[in-house]
Length: 116
Image 1: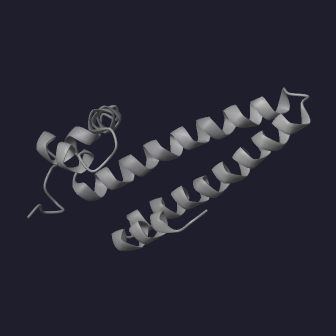
Image 2: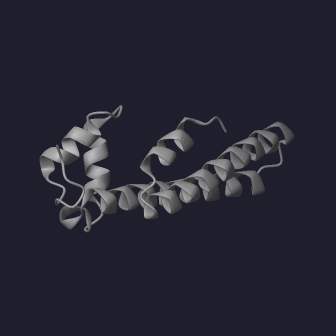
């Protein structure tokens, strides 16, 4: 069993990321944060949620810019739908970050299972 206070090793990263669709990409993304190498599992939870939040915010801004720069009504509506979905997703990610700070990991899992 892995202790929550133990440092996250390369093996632990691969074990975690093996549960994703792209193990190598997952490891690369987590390792892109310099704090990952010295983190514990609770800290890694915060790091991973924060990396997810950063990417979701970037994607939101891209769709916002696309919507602002198109004159086609159908595209504006489609981009608007994407913006609503990303806004809901960002709200959930922020909730997950707060739950992680409180150590409420099962609640994060349940939040992730909820439909947007």
